[in-house]
Image (cartoon, rainbow, N blue to C red; front, top):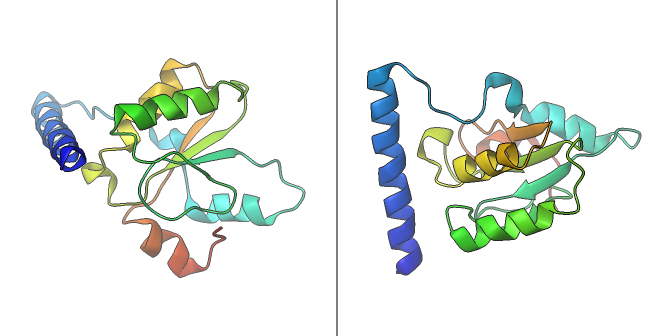
Length: 147
């Protein structure tokens, strides 16, 4: 029940923040379009034996993409701390990809805290997997690699 309340509070906060940003003319997202990586692009990298692989973190409640490290929903402080701890050994110039995949970005309580953390920690190539709908529609339905 406590987790459910935390998710509802996070969603309500996001909605209010987005309304305030729209009224003031700001986008308010911690990422820009250059910080997004398309599913087809990531799938291609994962399928290419010669390509340098990014570090991938699943920061939501969905299944794991091939090679992803499951952190859990980062709307929870405990999981956000878990992500921070996992990042300690990752060089700042390494590409780090995060994804949640539970829902469209506008509704997701997990991507903003995680992406903001990556920026605060000084990662030079943080990427957010551009799942416009969810992991099933934008990844698994295309047959992209899963663990």
